[in-house]
Image (cartoon, rainbow, N blue to C red; front, side):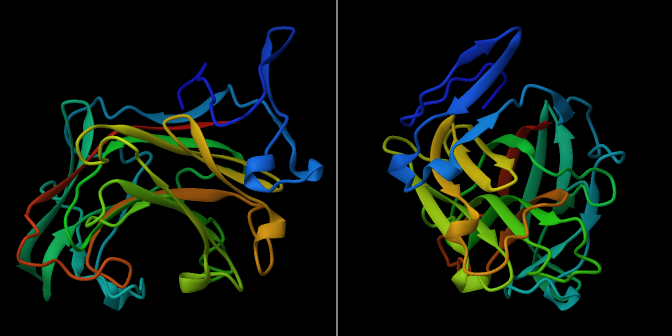
Length: 279
């Protein structure tokens, strides 16, 4: 989903109006959408980007770290301790490298990193995308996702969550796109998977993204639209009408993936080529 990208998946579009490229989504019948869900979007303005082209620590003007483990209230029964150490998160050779290590650290058996733009960048609506080569293995859980910027005063799930990409490491051909909100969180979240017909997400880079407007969140993998979620699809309040911030992390274990086993290799590495946001 780069600029001037080509959409597939049964979308009639490309209307040239003056000098602006307006993408008119004329038919989502394969997603079960009605005329009310047809959208017109113009998302050509790049408003945030990190190309990870400066060696060393991630850009502190954009990224914070979560530090700690499940005792910090993050839930999911994950096994790692998140740190801000360079051995868990660093920028090298044009990539953000997030590494999960098997080591005893502050009472946890694994370490990793979770980066977030909270307090430094958030946005309501637009296109959010990244290009990543994912890790794999039983109990490995990489994600690129978003939380409502009001989460400190409006606790989860009321703040809302958009999981642009999650992968169960034991299934390296399939990712999921999901939303969580009041009445549809955790095991009751609204979700759909996308499976590669050829290849795996750990053997090459893929682009993961959403296009988000007042009454829809569209999910893409490599320019392919595979899921659209609208207010009609959720079983509670639609909370995706305010700014959200971005998170990138590599978890170990947890309710979603289970624990690593004897065949899970460490260290595990998540390579992030870029993060870009358009409006």
